[in-house]
Length: 407
Image (tube, rainbow, N blue to C red; front, side):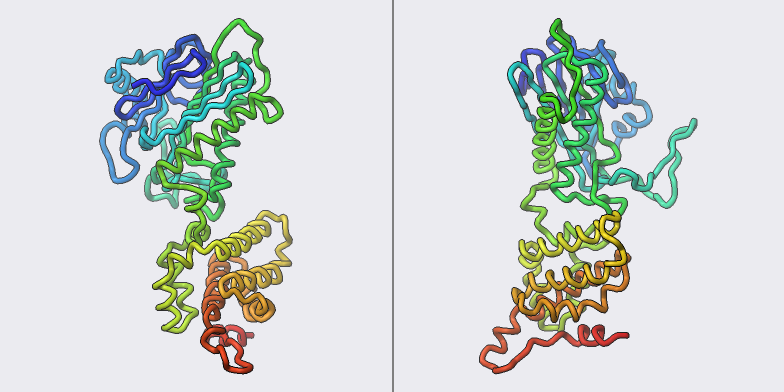
């Protein structure tokens, strides 16, 4: 099925589990493809193919793509009547129906991005520990990795209506990669391999095609050049769109305590348990019954996001580690205020939480955050319960009192 045509130079088609771009005019192509990758001028087609479902699906195609990419390309091309030797292949587990197309134009310059993506199982931060090392015999698994990384790949097909010098074609990949990382940054996507924010996945692929012609060769695709701007906008829009479709990953959906905190090794059930451990039974039952609304409360998420960002600033060396205790106590108190709604209690919360701010490891940070959330929730309805009782002052839970008096 013909989906679209770009600048009268590219036809985009979708059939079954494949999206392919057929060149109507010659293009220079630079790609990360294992077969027909690198810089090529003899290709007539680029395609993105779904070889399996993202989870729980093992059959011959994914292993063929990995072990024998030439046979994989031949198999796909034969099925879809494409000339294998003139094709470059991008493979993924993402659904082609979730592909997103974005087009940006300025005067006679057109940039089109066609992206598929999933990040739920394989998002990572550049520099995370690797799972394999490549040797003459193939890929050797490295400890402590015991399983194959989860599903998740962002694939980008990028088409440009004007010819580029080889250096500018290469720069397109850098600009597109920055756009991808900007999307993941805005969506606060967590690495599955470290406590950092993700910058991509371990299997991302890209192919850039620039139409050849008699006009002047463009020499720059950086951020200062209009071409770079168009690439950034198109790739950003397409990746953001496909992640919304494939993973239901949207800005509004990311307003979640669980999503923000999970890079420190906690899930939704664990988060609820950790917070409830600081509450009495009635308070814990109330929180569990209303946890979804609690987890997505914008002011609470904002306070925790600020606390986490300050933690990152200290980890990155922007803020000195010697100020950890003061910073964490102040902003953990802000978190408690966001939950309780009583900002007059800020200093009380700060003093209560200060003894918990001595350790800087991830478990201690989670402990502090959950305690601040519990402290605020314990007092959220206390003022209503004591309404009319002159001089009534909300008190900490028993566990709060015990920890406050710890040496």
